[in-house]
Length: 200
Ligand code: MN3
Image (cartoon, rainbow, N blue to C red; front, side, top):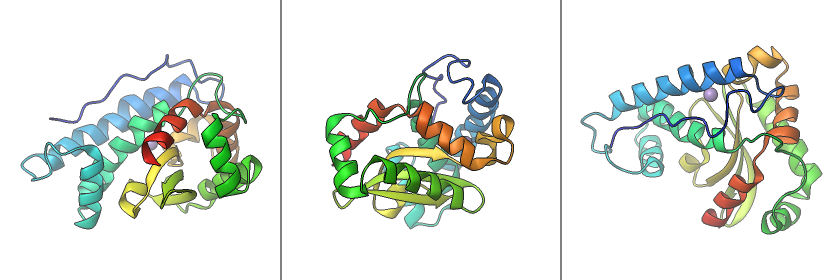
């Protein structure tokens, strides 16, 4: 089955002023669409065609297939990125089991917030900051380009895109300000909790 670009789960104006309509139009309609188009080209005739996105991500990384790592990896990452945000999101009201795990595995919400923002700030060049489950525990990670935690033996439950296309229109070069706005005002903790339950 070919990769497809889903519609955003909210209106293009829903995340303003933290993420503008213009950013979402470029990021979703142009960038994500390009990953879908190029991912389909890279999958055509490949033995991985028809496998799940998770399986393709892991196999592509094991085989060092750059076209699949970057395009199918980015398709997976963006499918969730849209769902990891919502209007009126962010802040400290994490669902119960997840809040407990953040306390026991990451040293509490404030340390999670600082470490997640730091991971995104210190990812040199393009990439992602992650909250992932590895060996049954939560872990903060960062990866370059189209990679994700699936390729590194972990299950992503939250990711923030730190490619310049994700923040340059709204924040110019101020990547830390974008990461702060993402954590404080955009995170859809319900989707994070859903992925946490599936991963643990
Ligand atoms: Mn992106």
